[in-house]
Length: 168
Image (cartoon, rainbow, N blue to C red; front, side, top):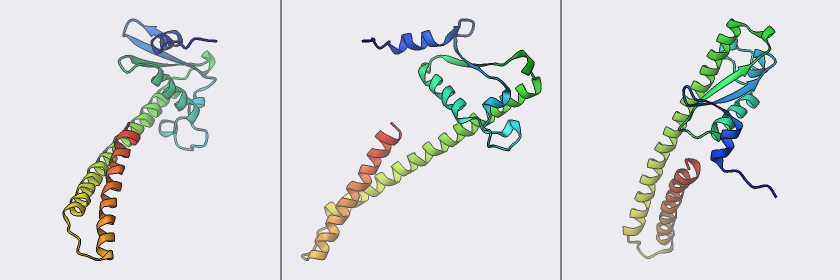
């Protein structure tokens, strides 16, 4: 039975370390520059999406390496394919693609934070109303009071779901 290696040893064995700047190197071999781009995206090269498999590989590699280290992505191509213009376009496409993803992730997180505050306020309001509202006798008012309590707990459950599952 194989022993599972510790994470510390795992990334040290898998990625080269550049002592000059303290970064780990993620190496990718390509046949041509176009291998990085999504083949279904007709946009110009510097605005094209990155291929899903390439993106997944980069994200998986980045997740292997702890955040305290820098990461370099080094692409290897055959010498016959070397083209300064395509290389520059690839760098711009890479920067554009991941800048967009970063902005989108930031917006998503802000929206979740707004939802958390809204749901928390709704929950506290419903629970407050349900607790301090003295229902007059009658089935309709009792059902309404219980519905307000349940609504308060549902909103509170959503707060916990967003904090511990969605963000966590």
